[in-house]
Length: 253
Ligand SMILES: Nc1ncnc2c1ncn2[C@@H]1O[C@H](COP(=O)(O)OP(=O)(O)OP(=O)(O)O)[C@@H](O)[C@H]1O
Image (cartoon, rainbow, N blue to C red):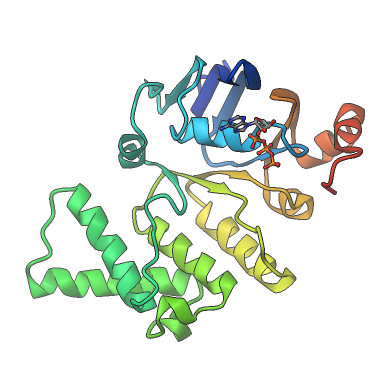
C-alpha cells in the first residue's frame, strides 16, 4: 500500500524559510492513524518549526499538508482544530481561578458551542457534569476536582490541560514537549496518561526526553538541520550512526 494513503496527516515537500534560512527543507512526513509519533533531533533541527507548520501556526514557504485526505495548507489554525487536528494547550487555556471541575466544564461547553447542541436543560447539564467527572478521572485528578487550577502542582496542571484538550475529543492530538520542566514522577504519570489517551487516537509529539520517546512512541522521525535524517522505531533510529553523530556535541542526551 502507498505509505501516504493510510496516513491521517501527511506533509510533502514541507519547507520554511526565515529570511532565506531554510529552517525546514523539503520534509516529507506521514503520520499513521493510531500511532504515537515523535519528532526528535538536536537543538535547532527544526522540530518546533515542523510542529508549528503542521498545526498551521506557521505558513510554509513551500509544500503541502494533508489531513484526513483534505489539503489543509491554506486552512487557518482554528479551523484545523475544529476539523480535529488539535494542539494541546492551543484551545485548552486553563483558567487559574476556576476549579478543576469548572475548567473541564468550560472546555466541554466550548466543544458544544462548536457544534449545534444547547446546554439549557438540566438533563443536558447533568450529562455535562458526568462527562466532566469522567474526564477528570481519566487524567487522575478526581481528588483535585474542587481545587482551583492555580493550586495544582505543575504536573497536575499539565494533566488538567490534557483533560481540557480531551474534552474536544480530537482524533489527532499534538504535544510540543509535554514533559518540559517536569520531575521524574510527573513524567511517569503524564507518559501513562498519554499512552492511555492515545488509544483510538493519533498523537504527535516533539520531545527532548529520549527515554520518554523510547518508552512511548511507535514511530520516530529524526530531524537535523531542517531535514529528515532517519525514521523508524526508536531502536532502529537510536542505533543509526548518522543519528548518533547528529546528536554529538549537542546539549541533548
Ligand atoms: N521565527 C524565526 N525566525 C528566524 N529563525 C527561526 C525562527 N524560528 C526558528 N528559527 C530558526 O530555525 C531553526 C530551527 O528552529 P526550531 O525551533 O524549529 O528547532 P528545534 O528543533 O525545535 O530546536 P530546539 O530543540 O532548540 O527547540 C533554528 O536555527 C532557529 O534559529
